[in-house]
Image 1: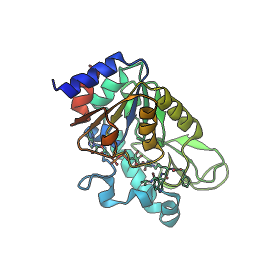
Image 2: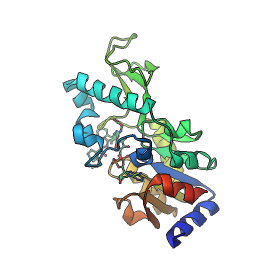
Image 3: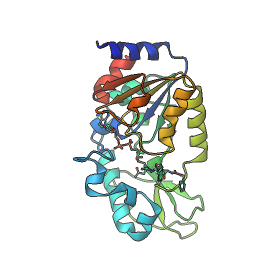
Length: 238
Ligand code: BV8
């Protein structure tokens, strides 16, 4: 076992307040496309920066809803991978995720803080508060809010939209108190989520980064493990 892996294992074993921060790379081995992989990422066919935004939805609702429904059908056919399972059984760990899939919960994780919402529900774009679960295998396409008549849209946070205040407050507090932060599969370029890494570090947390390549989080890592989450995370937490 490499010295870095051993150092990471020991820090996590000794941690009193361990926290994970995950991105699309955690779900990549389950077959869920990441955002920015130039070959397979969601950017290759669509620009999520445009589609995952109120402006994109206003300009072309059919394409935006079609993109989400394609991602929902893909999610309905995927399973949690070994990294989700290893995180889920670490019951003393709080899992802050940027992902909008439910694979951590399906692996049995209980304390999941969702920064960017979820593909599993639609909500009223008019802000009346109506929301409804959707069938991932048979997503609803475009529909209108039965309460106010506005358009319904996926229950995710788009670029330019504020994060759910309660989730963000919990994530900030958790990062503030963490003594070890395990950062898994994120390019660390989306804010304010990426700001949780320097926040935890500034409060004295040990930062362990797991990614298939160096990222903006590399300079903040006490331990950086380059490789697949499905292989490394179970060895870190096992
Ligand atoms: C906000 C939901 C306040 C939708 C998403 C300029 C500078 C700084 C910030 C900004 C700026 N201009 C605008 C902003 C703010 C903006 C932002 O950060 N933009 C960035 C891109 C510059 N942020 C926002 O708008 C946020 N809101 O700030 O509110 C506000 C309000 C009004 C006006 C202004 C501000 C909202 C951000 C949320 C956007 N929604 N998702 C959907 O899913 O469709 S973000 C989206 O990207 C995903 O949710 C994901 O969470 C996020 C980050 O991507 P990653 O998860 O990191 O995925 P990525 O593909 O990038 O990386 C995957 C990594 O995994 C890679 O490193 C890869 O190497 C690695 N990997 C791959 N395979 C594996 C692996 N690692 C391990 N194992 C493997 N097998």
